[in-house]
Length: 194
Image 1 (tube, rainbow, N blue to C red):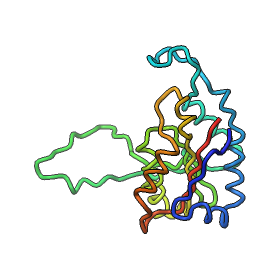
Image 2 (cartoon, rainbow, N blue to C red; image 1 turned 30 degrees about the horizontal axis):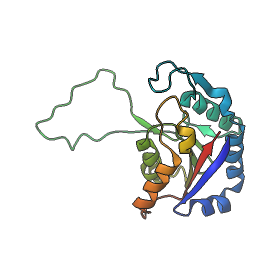
Image 3 (cartoon, rainbow, N blue to C red; image 1 turned 120 degrees about the horizontal axis):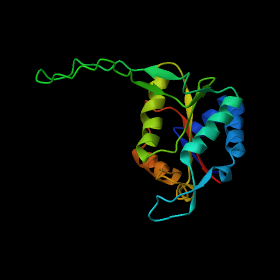
């Protein structure tokens, strides 16, 4: 695949070029190594595109994970932050049901190496915004990352996915309209295409 777009959020491109040039090279290498054509599948369930070969976000995500792992990036199995949700803010009228085996909630960063966080996003729009505007800040506040890279499809590529995913152009527009806050990390948004 190729990098088809770059957007520097909160001076992300300069910071990453100065502090993490070797890791940026690895990220670029991973993007180039993922051969999107290997992850097309025929779909019969799509009403608007029956029988058309579309890219599988799930399979592409696995391909990215395999390539980052080869380069010794810690993946989400190692980057979990467990959450202890507060209950003292419930009203006196609310009584939560007790769960005999509650699952312990967590947040995870897709990949981390040398304090650089990377998220590869094939999900809905809310996940992209959450990654940059919340999750990366949380991981920074916990001392795990100092900057981030978000890897997302551009619209042309997203239109060829078997599930509806968000895309680079939409994400960039919203970040520009939102602006930068004093708690935002430097993040480089990379849009890719096949």
